[in-house]
Image 1 (cartoon, rainbow, N blue to C red):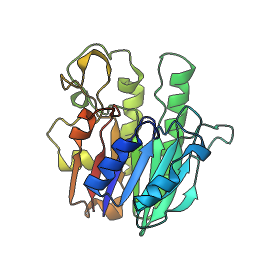
Image 2: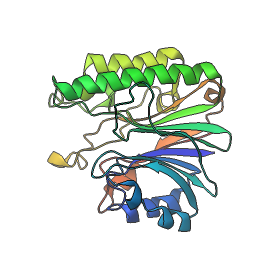
Image 3: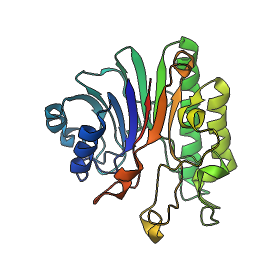
Length: 255
């Protein structure tokens, strides 16, 4: 079973890129973030024609998350992160696919910091921690995949001082990601590449792609029943270099 996460950065604008990658890579499950499309704008028909069933939660111009399943229909279990009924941002969706529960998330960026956006980032991630603990305690096979908007460690970002004040690298942000790992979740990329530098995001500015000035923001966390089932993992880095690309590359695992 191949499971991928891909911050598409505008699904309709980058639909040709997505379709090319789906055809080339043939993932069984895909978590998409930053759809930047309302529910009615989601290209469900085009994806169905490509062989993918889908569930999604859109938001006009911002955010948005979706789960795709090849030759299957995801069974949605929730379309929002619990813990704050007033939070209307489309940042979490969860569905069962072929016996695995998939949580797809697009965590808040948190910039500028300090300020209300950073405060929201921390609150949202604490809610994720609470929900993740419930999922872990359930004993179910779960993958929590998406753009966490956290660089877990200094080695997960290129050598620079330009991100020193950025919300993505702050001690508070990193501590919350570590709390997830402390619950028992396995960071699949780090499990397979314990000593290597791996990037999943390259900003459009300052030739960061051309310089390989990247960050690791996109993560797939595995619950206990799946940790020993992890066979391989990787980043489809070449997708970032295509014309009209998202600033993220797809990240995938096989179970």
